[in-house]
Length: 234
Picture 1 (cartoon, rainbow, N blue to C red):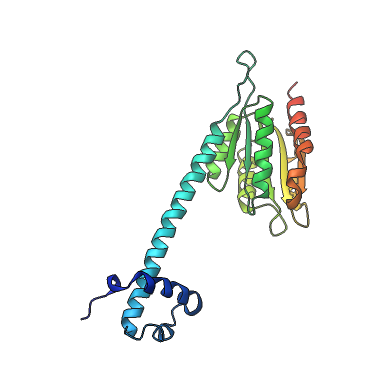
Picture 2: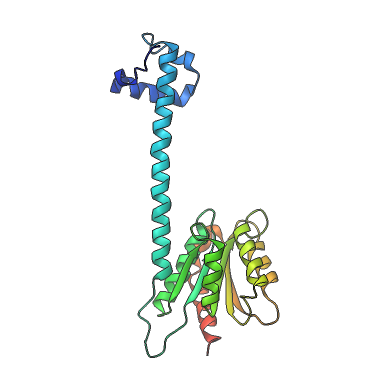
């Protein structure tokens, strides 16, 4: 049985192979035109060896990226401003999910405004935190803010599941809450969240809803939302 000769491929061969891969993928017969000294089996073995290394490298990079996202979210979740110790302010739970990044940007604008006003908060990104962790956070807070983009005509499934559990466990009752969301064509996500949550025993203080491309133009709306959220506490 012939052994694989991947170690015998020069750097120039590998670079040429990578360029050919973009065009021919696993059509190994095409590679023979450029590597006549190689057999079909040798090219096939080298191809799968390269694919394995590529996937292994990218899986490792993806894992590092996920770990970094979790670390960043954990840092934000535990981050609090220098609150006056004589008059402590209950932390606000910011819980959201994002697809294209605009809802994440809006969530970060809200967290920055809370920080600037000396209000501690938890920053819960449902892409890195579980529904159970989000529920526990809401339970420990007297105020919470939920956010979702409009996706397929409504809120994201993660927010729907969270709200269903909030209602089932009655964790939303007697708590002040606000909503935020982004959209391309319709504001359905925030409207749907509001319909589910606004019942007797709840205190809805308002929402910020914006088109995805106009998120950064909503600083005043964010400030007003935080003002109303805190005003309800007086």
